[in-house]
Image 1 (cartoon, rainbow, N blue to C red):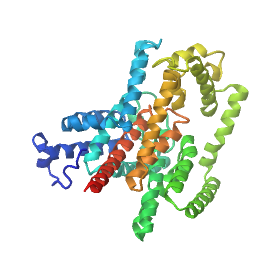
Image 2: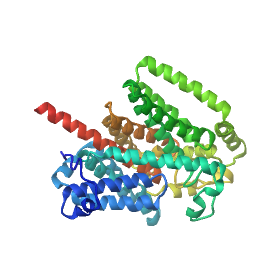
Image 3: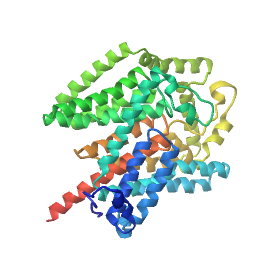
Length: 432
């Protein structure tokens, strides 16, 4: 297995520039690129795409071919590659135009980076740098979000949007779905260090961590939050409580969280409005046929299930979703909507690649969940990333979406590599 390299290098420009002849410097430079990727992830798509490509280019020369090929035999690596391969092969039986087929392969390509990240952070001891960089970047975004809520002219989105600018309260870049995904993940993952600090009587670090988590929570409650985050964040908290807390503590904590949710709901008009949309949008769609976030999703799911039943084994092929919705459209309103994404990861896969795709998707999620069965911070970060992706993918195709997909690749890759490194060390210790 890969060994940790360069645990305590002397950080300097000359050391960084020595990568051409120093393998320790090469490993360190790859770490810096992944840190940069984590910093850019909450802010930019173009920047992330460029830096991700640089990460791969910088990482490939550092690979030990035999060890890397051996690592690819593990299910946690095989299954992401299998999903990409299925998307590629699925172009052969699709009746969509070739441009649409290749466009649909694109969102799965990021999964090929996951085995590389796992391999790298199985040998590098600086995985925590990536997590701290992402947290720091999200904290800065949170501060900007509060500022934009009071002064909309501070938003960066008007200067970054390629098309007409659609202002959203508290959104400086991107959109409220991506921002809520990031803030919810940060708030929930901070639960582990908070409990760890409290158990070791480190009060002030616990208070600081709790204050940061509270900042993310308050932003989502009083500024802007996505409905997906509202549904999935309580489930993530429940997973943490049941996994890491004693039963009595978990029950008390969940009751306290429920009471806090009731208080925040009563204090936040924005939160009440967001929650009320669940029923009002569905009702308006059912009665009047008006497109809406909730009502349209139900219609997309209904049609997608029918498409799946028509081709249950291998699906309709890569890139076929839009053509199927075009042929199924009728009348006006929600029934006439044509989309390329059914807003469900399972149905997205099922329509294109049938039962084979569903098995590959859930097998990947399952093996990644099993990877994070331990008790360290890396285990919890990885588990939180996988759990969030599974839950949010009930209402979106988040594994294939740019922002959420890269969070999954980076989170599972870094945390998984750290976890595999600990497993290798423990096995080596037992053999001595």
